[in-house]
Image (cartoon, rainbow, N blue to C red; front, side, top):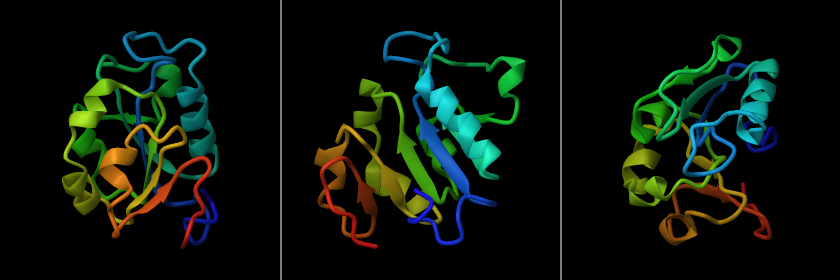
Length: 134
């Protein structure tokens, strides 16, 4: 991700969708998404997150800004990471999300939103097994 965001992660805003360790739960324990958020913050990024079931974060995660909707979390983001594949995210208007972002770079490792994103020419869509053109 740091190569996709010119100048590294410092002073960048990263939206993260899905904080729980799997869809259908509100448990943050053993969540790789939370580890990613912490790492992004350590690199100097601001993290704007959304999760359908998480309404409040424990104090140790106070640097993560939690938003009530996917669109709010994507506002002015330099990149979006699909961390936990909640079915709710398939119903989101991706053109609206892309328009809200400062730089439409979307990391979707498992191609969860590929049907909505692969045809978008105005977004850098990063996924496993797909070459990235910057």
